[in-house]
Length: 115
Length: 187
Image 1 (cartoon, one colour):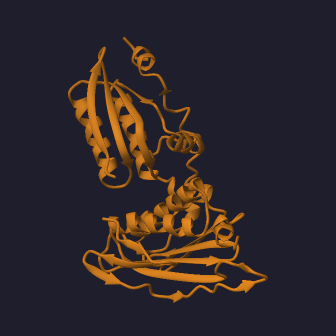
Image 2 (image 1 turned 90 degrees about the vertical axis):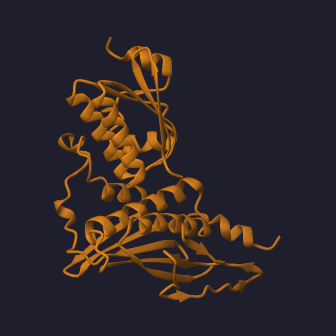
């Protein structure tokens, strides 16, 4: 299953709804280009909804890290929402769970961004 | 496209319109012993694959099927298939560097107690000692370097054997309480 991405705006925060697999190749490219496109448009409050991401490999993890640092370096914020158990476990064993700002409630996540 | 189609024991490979049979197959032996049918004692199959992204996906899917046939549960199947995916990425991307003249060989062996997986590339040889610890604070935000770590996290044994003609990566997952065996037992 390839990855799909769609965006919506909620109170100044861009929520990116992702579904499928974030893996080497297409999935990682979709994520990279989506985040790059948002930042270039000045949309720097980004919430990645991973609720329908059922698989991620080391390349996908690297792409999440890249998105996080790219947003941060441009004065933005990138947070993660609704991790599946698989993705949660992967971020735990790679010690990235505490690096990312991970949320499980969309409304609270939106409010958590800097005004 | 997912190309590796399993028969009752192991797979045949069709790839980009071509057909490859397994390089080596030792047929399984089902031995009756006191009315109980035991699983295979030694099965092995190997493939020679192109250095493409498609190979990575195929290797992952085949590993999942092999793991299921060996009786692993869903979580273990996910771990095994992911470890094989990471190993295949290493072979295709870092070892052979997508060189169309270089091949990846992928072998699965099912023994009584283990699923043994060997992936070999034709690259320069991976020096694992030079891979930085991805859990070190200074490396947490690096965008690569987690593949070997994930393999070691998900498999019981991971051995890396580099040479001047390539790298052989051997991974083992122990079979615990094989449910596939019990399903085959006479009622």
